[in-house]
Length: 221
Image (cartoon, rainbow, N blue to C red; front, side, top):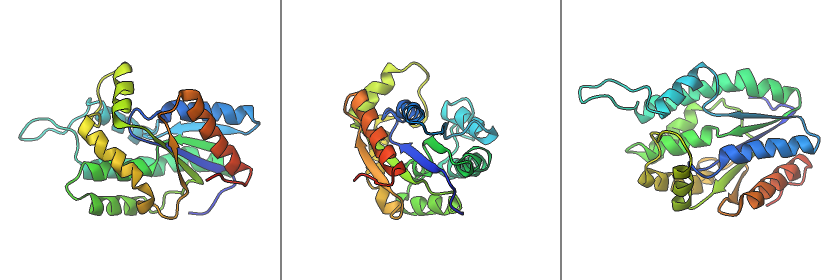
């Protein structure tokens, strides 16, 4: 997929890492610095993304002989890939062409990590999920908010709302391991880890510095 004029930034991490909070704060900081910035997320707000959110909140299940259950990893990977292409075409690419900075709360990194962690063959599923997303535009920078699983669990428990299908602590530990191995699955992408166990202001400042450095043409290590 051809490159575009704007910048595409993605925030990733396990549930409770703060991707939603810091994506929103980053857009505010970019706008304050004079950049045209746009906040989005995956699953998207499009028709397929809306369907996925119903699955994640357990409102949509698959009827089986053993009773209702969430869709399996392969179905979820296909749904996320379809939503991603719709998301790119409808929201992300047009804004990048206009020169905007697009900040997405999650992208295909979540698909690779989550779907491989919920399968019986993580290595093969990670490779297959990457292939499903072959034509997805690569971000200019990926910031992984790295936080201890127990701290992330505490944060999730303090939020209102129903438990989602990926919230089990043992699964979250597998997901954390998957994120820490992310560069192995995406060796050509620029992936930067941010210590998200710090106070929220410190994390927000580090995220802001990383992105502004990229936009200025001097990426930080």
